[in-house]
Length: 237
Image (cartoon, rainbow, N blue to C red; front, side, top):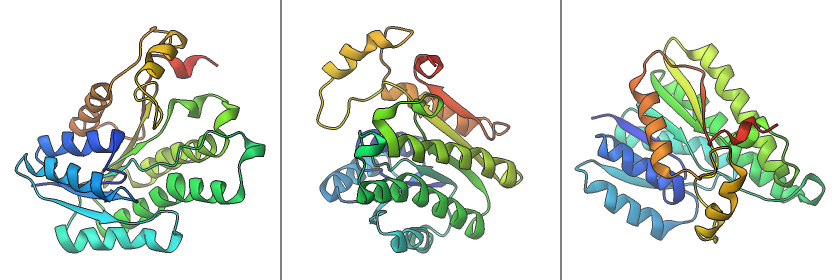
């Protein structure tokens, strides 16, 4: 039975991905930062698919703790077949408003953690698939998401760079969602209100992302690609 490590797997899109992979027969190593109760609830739901699920609390804002996650998972599961970098720090501030601590936390969570986990995956497993969760904003210049956009753009470059370097043993791809979920604390009214800004005049759903996941999982010749699942919003430049 294959094993997937899903970062940020307790809530939102990460949770949907963890449950979907469990439904496909993956054991789940579920990372979370602080949402302990949500992590345990997601893990309990995941186990209903007849797979193993273990939770791992690692604070990605603490740079020194990041490499420990891969070692912990490999002790419990022996190997990992899929690494999903979904954890993210979503700060809606422009460049001049972003504090040093917000910048550091965003870079650590959105870029440094994936970088280190990908490196450890290469060095200690050296087979399988990596999928990085990006954002359609990497093709646009949205000033109100300064540090977030910079970190996700760098992660997109890392996705392509590692795909070229490691393709013989590890495929690396990305998914760039658009208007799929409302920001934390906002209702679905946010999606309805902003759908008019999308070329399709609709918003997406997590099921759209999961279909993209299936495509990447089931297509062994896809490497170094970023799937924009955004109704064409990223093309409005």
